[in-house]
Length: 58
Image 1 (cartoon, rainbow, N blue to C red):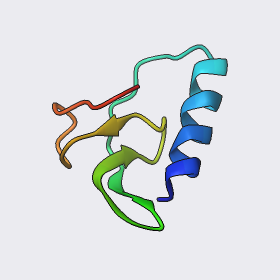
Image 2 (cartoon, rainbow, N blue to C red):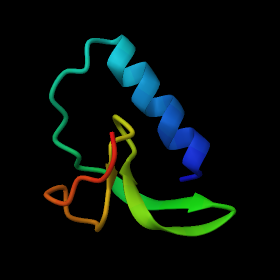
Image 3 (cartoon, rainbow, N blue to C red):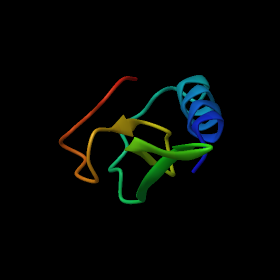
């Protein structure tokens, strides 16, 4: 997932009420190349590792 795609998902998720997400679909995040972190494909939340317990920035 590209960096801007995760940001768009996050914005859309917040506009829909920012409800709880189980983060079942996490993949690597890219900024042209691997950025070193991960993002949920459902809500756009970023993580430091593929584990949902390692939340990065919002």
